[in-house]
Length: 282
Image (cartoon, rainbow, N blue to C red; front, side, top):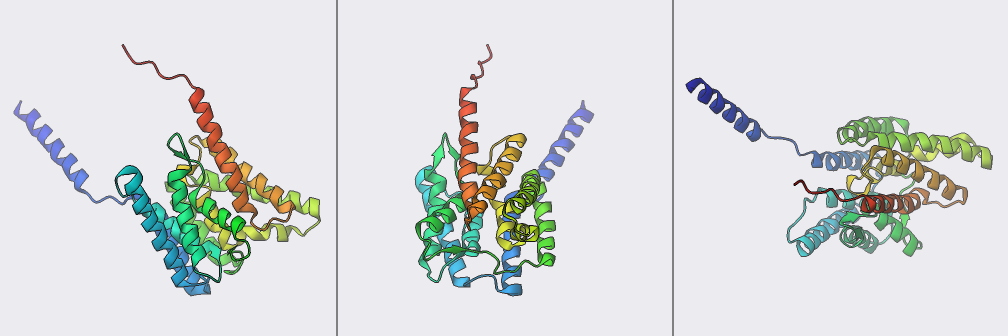
């Protein structure tokens, strides 16, 4: 009996020690990664238009998320997501003015709380904010294109680090599907338009696409829940983007995700609503 009690106590102590061990919060992986991209891109090639504009976008996103979280749910949410949204706006938005950065971050965070169906996000917040600004204020707002260049070396480093992080979050299949689909549709566009294949492939080596591939289309809260559904959605985004590019829409990837992502989410919500509710056990 005493041996049993001793063993049980030892097991309890071991479990307590295991719980006391510091564990790295997986939610910090993406913010650390995007911060590394930001620092390396800015000090290596001067990618940011202004450190102050990017800072304004980050601060606005964090403040809006804290305030709206308190108003809607009575508590301040984990702010890693707001940080990613703010830094994405700061990197991807291009404008000679300060106000578009603050407004884009405000729209981005507000969409998380307002545009919901059955408690689920419908649009990717950053994508919604940037696409809205590109549509509503095209005269004063543009998006990052090739200001950072298309050098293969930095892109390889980003892809290696991004693949490691996204694979830990079990989202790498989304990135792979999108990239393979983009390559396929680049060949198709080249055959249709007669443009050199290299010209059709070039955009995916740019910095904007790295953020789009690793952060926008893989966002856990705005992607469908099943693996097959995620793969189908990534393919659909690439298909819609290819069509938009044929019509010479410069911001094709943003618009493609803007339409395809919510459509996939709404279809999944509708299908789940038709499933019979589980009967309670007697």
